[in-house]
Length: 89
Image 1 (cartoon, helix red, strand yellow):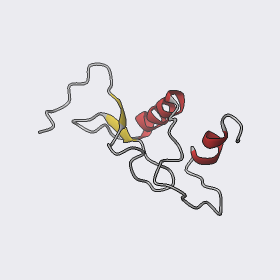
Image 2 (spheres, one colour):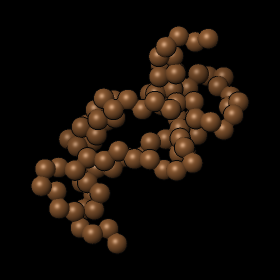
Image 3 (cartoon, rainbow, N blue to C red):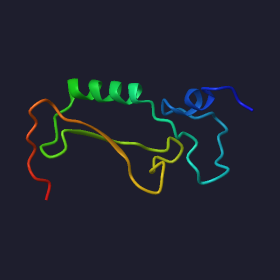
């Protein structure tokens, strides 16, 4: 059994062990720390343009495939105070 935090240490920073081989279709990382995700949004907030409909929106991914970590897409989003985005449709 691996120690607590092992999965985050191995897979959470877009790094994989050199000889990593997938043994199943399940995502190896299924804990997406709010603090780390919020930090990524804050860094993006300082350097990227806001999308007129979505503000800042980032997609969660399985770091071994770049695909969705679940069978549905999941996102984290940041909207500035007073954001009045255009209608998306």
